Length: 338
Ligand SMILES: C[S@@+](CC[C@H](N)C(=O)[O-])C[C@H]1O[C@@H](n2cnc3c(N)ncnc32)[C@H](O)[C@@H]1O
Image (cartoon, rainbow, N blue to C red):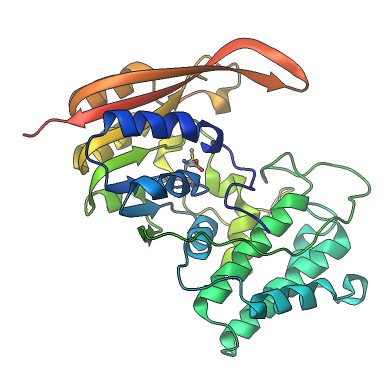
């Protein structure tokens, strides 16, 4: 069974959460409601459940939304019904399946060919079971999220879908496994919206802001997850088999600092927590930060008293330690009343 953090995702704060959570406990005196503005994997929300009464979580990707709905679905356990569906689907002889959208587009590229046939077959079965009224919406969400976690584990990539690894034989390692929903008394409100639009309507004690800081668009990095979630079967283009552009973030463009300022100005919260890391001097232009440290400081200082916390760690590259120091920063601003 998969837990919410069993996923490869650029910029996931899973490993940093013990440090971040401790700082939030120490420096945010009022924290019963949180707004996780750029939810990503959902691990930030999952880690804050025991210190909050309500969390509003948002991300503009369809795959992230369905993952939140699945993990935070309160009334469904992994019932025998879902376990039966799962074991039936695992016992299908994939070699005998006919071609489908997934095998035609991704077979021999992102997945082993027969695995791709099974992934496409499972996606189709989940859709028709839902349309025929045999599974509820929550069961549908859990099955789709389970499929995403299952195929992501065996994908022939370095962790995202900007490209697949060129090789002759991709091993068949796919197995359909269920996710383990999280039990909590905390109220979770889920949104799939542009962060800046949503921010105008939300009030909370603490806003947690973890935007993308470079030009790499999440909707392009995780396009296979988006396409399999939406299942509207668009024509895919290019070597990487990408769908038409959607959800392209202004945070990955040169206007990033302007949009962040607008977001922060619009927030109705008591504390603002912002993550930042110092990849600014990186040699690769796509990984260079779109917002400088000084810009973030100035934006936050205009809202109230800001403290900066620093965690140092070394990054590991291809087996050897990258000697350059890598710092993870956390800003906590106590918003002043106007
Ligand atoms: C650095 S990741 C967040 C990681 C998350 N904190 C975690 O630990 O998994 C940034 C997220 O912001 C989302 N995103 C980018 N621009 C957005 C926008 N304008 N509105 C909503 N979400 C956006 C991306 O889809 C991505 O999941």
